[in-house]
Image 1 (cartoon, rainbow, N blue to C red):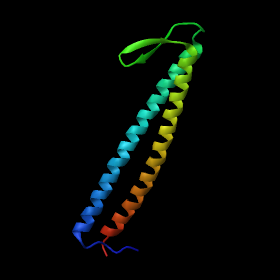
Image 2 (tube, rainbow, N blue to C red):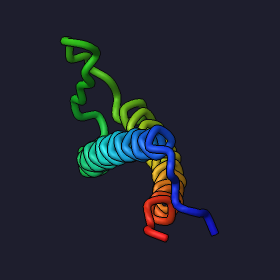
Image 3 (cartoon, rainbow, N blue to C red):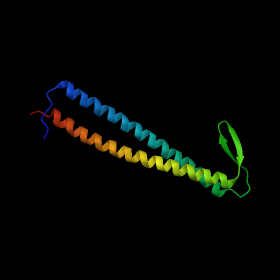
Image 4 (cartoon, rainbow, N blue to C red):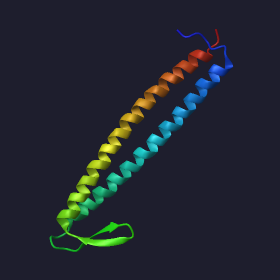
Length: 117
């Protein structure tokens, strides 16, 4: 068992590292939420494309321009983007889980370090 830290500088450094890790977790959670929103947007586009008739006019955004495209190309692009966003979201979820475990370990260490003898 770790004995309580007597050196305030070491304790302060641990607290600062804990806070940095908390901020990192918050950033990861925010990025993951953004990926989930992107996936949902792409799935809505996918549903629209599946419901649209063949030969209908479909436009895709390229910068500030809307460019006409065919249904097959648009569907392929949307499917690819969903795959990329889901992969990125899964990666962020794993990172988030790892950082959460690290935070829990750090929290326990800080509790032990600050416990009175």
